[in-house]
Figure (tube, rainbow, N blue to C red):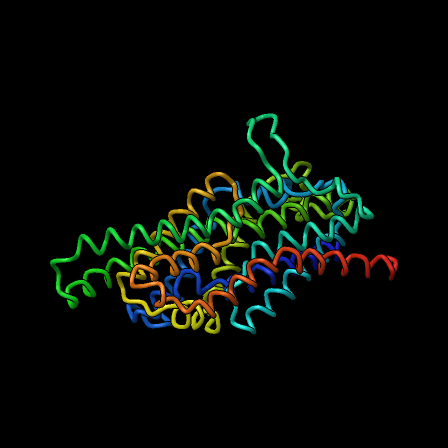
Length: 355
């Protein structure tokens, strides 16, 4: 029982880190265009992350039971997955790289589960058809394919949307443009914060639901006092209290800020004005909403970064600082394999110590 509660706390630590690590996703452009002060932007992002986190459970279900065979998942498996993801998140935060918390968690979970199954690769659900819905699920369909298609879509849509906006504002003065889109960017930033909550906060919800389901299966709650029976989960489900706890944790993490990554996204990659911020945020938030609806644990980091690149490229291709972009791309590509190895090695180390 103590172990289960400890693992839940570790999961919430990951959620808190996810909150400040990914703060920049929804506020970097708003801060860099000076539409809001950093403090105002963080408060708004925290509030809308909270609202978004309470909506839907599709992404949480994918994380909790759609990527690995849960019969091989133990409490120790989940601990190793969370530790691996936390290590990578802290490292990339320190380096100021906007890497994906989502992919860090997914990669680490897959690696840890593979180690728990003693290298039985069939535990990874690569691509399967859901009998009830008839839709393809698994690591390839829900994670790897979107990892490449979603940033590409973000770049293209951001470029096209910004191009259309430029055509529409030809007759306006620069001052009026900044005034109009300074106000509109408040809406787009709120929409981005809400979308981030509907996708990112749900990942830890799925992990905590998996913890409770696994603990129930292992009999860890057999001697629970009656007032703790709400922890008992005979089937995989996302309880309301789990939603509320994860939403509040992510919101508090967001409120802590993530200024290293904000500098990378909002200043180093491309110079932005309010109209560019509006275009990038609207593009990213809309794509994330579609992904959340279909239960795809998308990387909000990848989407907003790609949208900023697409929007910046409408000025001229040289306006985007491709050297910085190259560093970001390396972080994107390396996150899944490195965290999978971290999760695998940490779980194997526990085997050696007898756990």
